[in-house]
Amino acid sequence: MRTNMIILLMVSGLLTLIMIAGRIIPAEETAPGETPGSSAVTVRTDEESIARGKVMFEKVCAKCHDIYGTAVLTGPGLKGVLRGNALPTSGKAATAENILEQLNNPFNKMPSFFFLATDDKLNIIAYLNTL
Ligand code: HEC
Image (tube, rainbow, N blue to C red; front, side):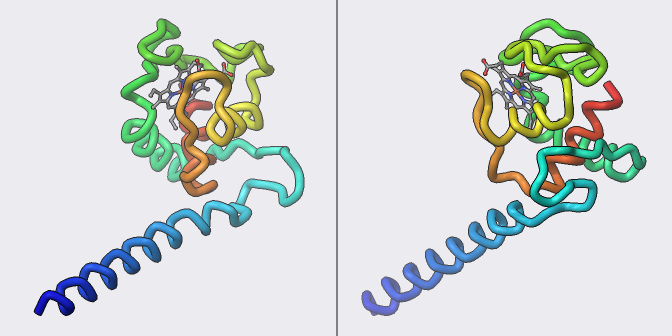
């Protein structure tokens, strides 16, 4: 009986690992709108990407970032973030490439979002572009 329980626990642990790996690995694929082997990012402007990006933003970014202004919550408010010249904290150029970089290798204290699928990150950028 005890051995059966241990085997069951090991199998379910393995399944969880496989599920996590399946979530992480597709993030490395080149998503539509991204040029392979280059850092150029085409900002998506279709309604569907923007709507998906809004949902993702509300889920993972909104607790630290306001969208209605530029005041700092935990992170800077992101209203008009792609319309200004410079990103609010690092002062890097306000480009989609630099925002993607912020999600993958964040400047300073922000947690990394490298584990999100590239598709989700590009949708978040599509949404940021509308703020
Ligand atoms: C736990 C809080 C937290 C979460 C969640 C978070 N951020 Fe941040 N973010 C920060 C902080 C803090 C900064 C200011 C820079 C720093 O000190 O790391 C920042 C900075 C930024 C900047 C400005 C970077 C620059 O170069 O000036 C952008 C753009 C940004 N975040 C976008 C996002 C997006 C998009 C998400 C969701 C995927 C997100 N953040 C999730 C805390 C957070």
